[in-house]
Amino acid sequence: MELWPAIDLRGGNCVRLLQGDYARETVFGHDPVAMVGRFLAGGARRLHIVDLDGAKAGAALQADLVGRMAKAAGIPCQVGGGIRSLETAAAYLAAGLSRVIVGSVAIEEPELLIRMACDFPERIVLGLDARDGKVAVRGWLDTSTLLAVDVARRHADLPLAAIVYTDIATDGTLAGPNLAALGEMLAVAKAPVIASGGIATLDDIRRVAGIGCTGCIVGRALYDEAFTLADAIAAAGDA
Image (cartoon, rainbow, N blue to C red; front, side, top):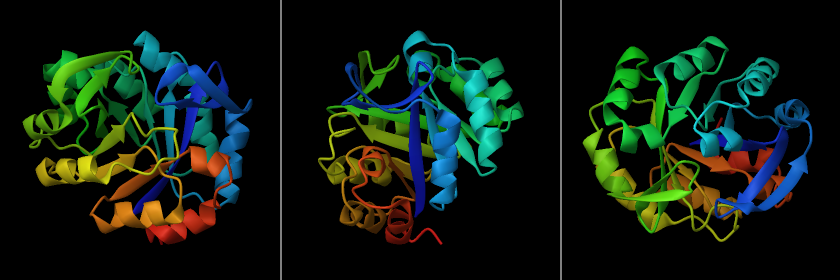
C-alpha cells in the first residue's frame, strides 16, 4: 500500500484542521517547502498536498506555492483544493504535479469531471469527503444529499487514477479510520481507493492495508510524532 504524507496549506502555512473545521486549526510549520524537505529526509516516496484556502474559495489560490513544493519534492505529488476547471487541472499538471484531486466538480458539474478524466487519463483523482456517508463540497462547508458510494458507482467507468475517501468525522482526530465506510467504498469502486482520516497508530495503517486500500494518507500522527515516517512506510509495505 502506498503511504501519502499530507501537507495541508492555509495562508501559506502547514496546518491541520479538526474534522474539517476551519475554526479548529493547528499550525505545524510556516515553510511548506521546508516541510517537503523534512518528509523527503524521512523517506517519503510521494506527497499529498491540499490547498485549504482554494477548497473554500473554489479557486487555486496557492498554486504558485504548490508548484514550488512539487519542484522541490522531485517525487510524485497530488494536489487538491479549488480545482474546478479544466484549465486549473491542466496548469497544475504542467507545473509538475503528478495528478490532481477534484471533489466538488463531481457533485456540481459531473460532465466536467468526465471531460477531465478523459483529457487526462489516470491523472485525475476523485476526492470523496463524506460526513455521515454523504459527500461534502466546497471545502467541507456544504453537505450534499448524495452518498459517497453512489458517486463512486456513478463514475466507476472513468479512467481515474484513484479515489481518495475521507471520513470527515475522523479527520484530524487520531480516532482511527472508519473501516466500515472504507469497506463500502472498496465494494463499489473500480479505481484504487486511498484512505484518509483518523490514522493514529501503525496498526491503523496495517488495518487499512489489510482491507484492500491501495493507499493511505497520514497527516496529524506524523506531525505529532506518534510514529516516524519510516515506520509508517514499513507498516504500509510501501517498498
